[in-house]
Length: 130
Image (cartoon, rainbow, N blue to C red; front, side, top):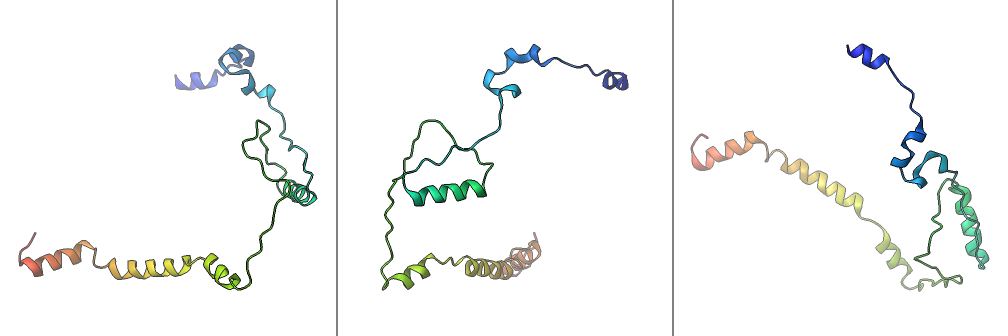
């Protein structure tokens, strides 16, 4: 009985279901995503935008109302030379050291947290069996 149900496949006309979907979600309304051209008065910013779009051509840029606007004339603030070394050290992550500390702590604590060890210690402290 189930073989008959699977073998009887019917083709369905998609126009019958158009009223179920929003018009802008229909497959026929979809098109390729094209990034907008770089419209910047600042030549440095325009060059950066062109390089970005060459590296990531498939990224779609939202063309709706703009909620953030960047300056067309960005100001570059250099670090003071006397603070450069301290600032560079502050930007370096100590993730590897923290990861090594965590692994070492897990190696030290994991035998203590086993049920066998906990049972042995309980018996030594209270002199009873569980």
